Figure (cartoon, rainbow, N blue to C red):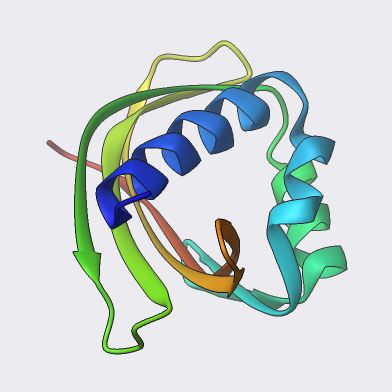
Length: 121
C-alpha cells in the first residue's frame, strides 16, 4: 500500500472507531506513543485512552487531509481538519496531526498525535 492509501484507511478507521467505540483505539497506540491534546501531554496507551474516553461522546466529520512521508522511511505524517460535535453540542473545527510508524509490513502504530480545536474561524 502507498503512504496515501495507508493514511486514508487509517483516518477513516480512526474517526469511525472514535465516534462509535473509543476503546477500539487502544490497539493503535503503544507505550512510546505521545498525545498532545489542547496543550496537555499524555504518554503511553493507558494515559492516552483515559484522555480520549474523558472527552465523552463525539462525532467527527473529516473535511480535509494532507499526507507526507516522514524523515524516517518507515513513517507517515498525516494532518487532518474537520469538525467535531462533543456531547451533541454545536460542531467545533479541529485539526489533528498524526505520525504513524511501521512495525512491519502493513502494520503501523500512532507514535505522535497532536489535537487542537480551532476557535474563531
